[in-house]
Length: 448
Image (cartoon, rainbow, N blue to C red; front, top):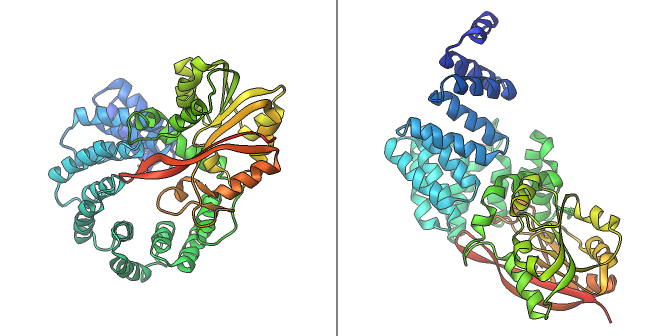
């Protein structure tokens, strides 16, 4: 589309022409102009399915997953037999951890077009996310039969083989992939994760470093990956990485915590305080309050409830519940250091998992606690080295900015800051790939 054509389309009142202009902008990376064009086309004709679907794609790329989902649902209502729209909606569901919904839609996409490799690959991914690796494997293989040179499909086949303990088969896939590793656009980061999972840390490190050369903006995420294969340990997951993760999760966070096999961190913290006889408190500070799950359990047990979080989409969910007396968007360490006056309880569910050495957090918390106050939080245990901190393994937790903390490290770091362990135990913290992920629930008080 040349300049004169774009001018003519801009003057057009035809929604299809305006949507075509949006596609031109989108193809050339001008997503703001593309979004404006799609919204204008939809305003003129709400049934312009191309504009609706493409707008959903732009919103999803920007991390506005719930808005994207709404567009894809509308597009599917308009054109229920379009395999690409079905796949887009399925991917949006998967981005919100709605893996059962995603799998159902991918199955429909396979039925709509059995030769469409993306549909079979998407179904395999959803089944893997549900922990159904044996069921996922044939769909990966079928996708490779249709598109045998697709390295991403082969990497995920390798990962699902590794998850089933078929390490030799996973190595065979890695050997095939190694022949294409220098090809333009090769997914070095994903291949590095596969290599780390099958016991090849040096090769994994090489892949992560190659990804960083091509994508320097991913430095924070790559630092975590490198640490998982022997590199330097970052102080914490970066704000940028966490913003990306929790923006995608915000809308479905409460849904994922609703059952007995969902996220449990908030329940662990509240139950630990109850076990220690904390019936009522004056001021409670909820660090990393998220959508307010801990706050809901503690609201009737305190006079004042303050929530702190960095994620605006998560805070937006918490605001709707109207349970906090104060909600602040802030870095928790900076907020604690500025805090004047003591509090009775500090809670932090599934937040300190994103910090490495806990010394700075414990020091800031100790400064804010009343002499008989308590600090309750959750972590992931480091069973390999109880006196140390490590990045979580690359089976899902490491890629999402999580660390593992040894029990001795927690005890020693607490003591160095005038705190003592009053309770520490293991319990299922959440569920991944259909299996429980063990966590540590810890309550600290003043030493002595």
